[in-house]
Length: 496
Image 1 (cartoon, rainbow, N blue to C red):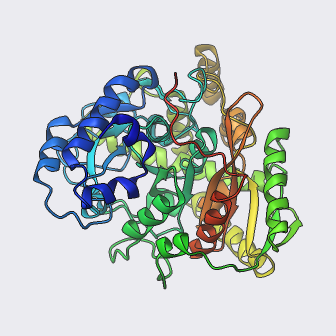
Image 2 (cartoon, rainbow, N blue to C red):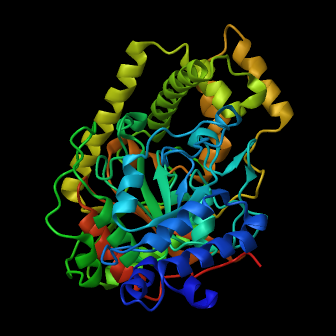
């Protein structure tokens, strides 16, 4: 197979060629590895490659009738553990940690026939909406190398857009699939909480805010990937409603239902929304109106600032706990020099959060979920910008040494409001991405679709949010939109 043919195919198409024996799994893996060698030096999307094991697995492949048999895939360097290989979470502190077992997510990928060729870059512990860290450096956007592909699944996004692999494993705890999808012109689905459990042992990631899925270029790939990963895992902390049909069937032959659709372009936290993002939403809702849907402008029915403060409180508690666990594992205390300033601040503030406050914070999540349930009694779907603007430049959202030192000094003050300090620390990045976090806290499915390109040529996605368990509606609309003139999703962009 020519490399030009490989990069034009989606994963479903490549699997079909393997099944029909028009190409071998080994050939696909070799092309993917060559793509890494040629493109990764400028993108810094892939942090580790498993060439020998991937080629051996490809050569030994015999069952060609699995949905993604022989298709190369990259997985994210957080939670997506491959036994015997490093899992660093983008942190210097974890640089030499070896996974003792495969994650459930990896098991599902392998059962579907994927061949794992490596791990992708991510910010330290997935705490940023860009993919920059001290251990591996910054990942760059194939559309324009001066810009970020977003985070925390930025390495995954850059790998798919560049044509290294047609699908990459990703995760989303506050928008970490949808944000890179918006910034790179991909499809980014966050399924319903509990739909794609990642255990064993870590089924309560961020108390259900975080899920594992992937980034794709086509709706049919997203649907097939969803069907392969959606499973009832008995030991998981959260369970999703049982599916009554496959999403691939809906993607191939979508029903023509009429929906009540609400939309807003106002930032939930009162920050600025770029006119390009507003335009993207207005173009989509006009199209949906023309298709016969009832569309109405509204407001998000909750206090977005309070929601974010509760979200950050969870981040603080989780990071404090995680850092203590890592220190026990490595047998020493972590130093500020080997950690991202965001990690350090969250972990230190987390040590001062009471169990009462943490519990009350989680109760607020449930209040928001209840409000959204009432909202969806009136509206089937909610549309927002995925991100408030196109991608930031590389380095733009990283604190300077002076800013990091200032944060540490303020943190040491006896009378400082530590939680406000955390909010202010995140505000520059939150300004880019204020729309995604609420679906993580409520557990709802949400998808980012590539329907807009800015005047300077950068992608910008639109987000559609459905009630819990209703991914079918998202796939129905995504299929329709993919076939319309609105669709600007690219085949591949290699950064040249």
